[in-house]
Length: 330
Ligand code: TYM
Image 1 (tube, protein in one colour):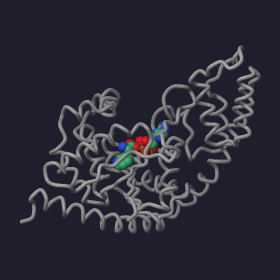
Image 2 (image 1 turned 120 degrees about the vertical axis):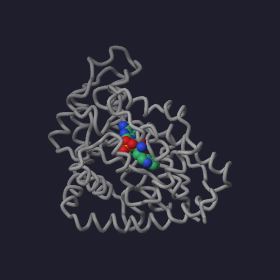
Image 3 (image 1 turned 60 degrees about the vertical axis):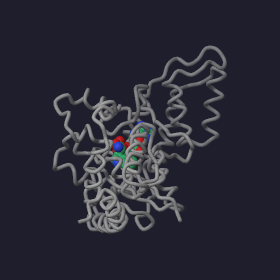
Image 4 (image 1 turned 30 degrees about the vertical axis):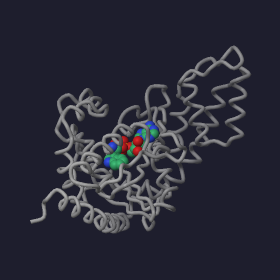
């Protein structure tokens, strides 16, 4: 039997290279050999109270950008979280196994509590149990995500273990996954933090960015006067530029600039020009496909409807087992 893979992306804004290299690139590879469930986490988006008018276009765009990146809806289940009523039901069950203390200690909760002090809602607190429900509803083995989701995966394993201990074995304990073995964190271009859907917008490359915008953002990336002694260790912000170059440029260009750096001959202007052109080559075909697809609403609706059927088939089996094991079968 094929191993089961589950992963989701919140519909809170434009997808960027962090989402691509942390998650989507893995989805595209995994669709060949695994039984895959990928979804738009629209309930999770509600924890930050998005404008109702923006939700639908955001969900459609996430679907279009995934397909434009190479995900084939015929090979995977591609669906919206809110189309699967079994997920909130399992979420309710898992909330009985999740403790206030551990939820309050979660890094993502603490961050959000700090950034939106007027809206520390219960959905934000129980974000990890909803995420565990997303994953466990299909009894997943592997969850392709970026490094920022590692703690949520650890909590998912804890909730799964508690359920199994209390009611009997139902859930495998899923692990975070990346083909490169290590989970990745794609840095922003300003040397401060990571690329993000809602922060650091001028230092994040979005899959929807036009060529000129990419050029401008890359040329503004933080650099300095360059090293003055051979083989000087790189400052973080320079290491970040090399990391981005490794992802989108040829090995030849990468090695050339690395040699230049080590010989103190680096010209960051040239390096950034090269990086910008390589990013454009990478992003523009995805952008063009995604834009075309976003206008084809019937196609997006068909993908969502088919994904929903596939996902509900698997979800309803798991939920019916969970209900029986808990004793809810009158
Ligand atoms: P979200 O929507 O913030 O991000 C989607 C995916 O992109 C990854 N990612 C990154 N990877 C590397 N570098 C970055 N700068 C970067 N930014 C984002 C994220 O790690 C993620 O894999 N809670 C999740 C959504 C979710 C989910 C799930 C994921 C809900 N239920 C079940 C997996 C399984 C989130 O907010 O991802």
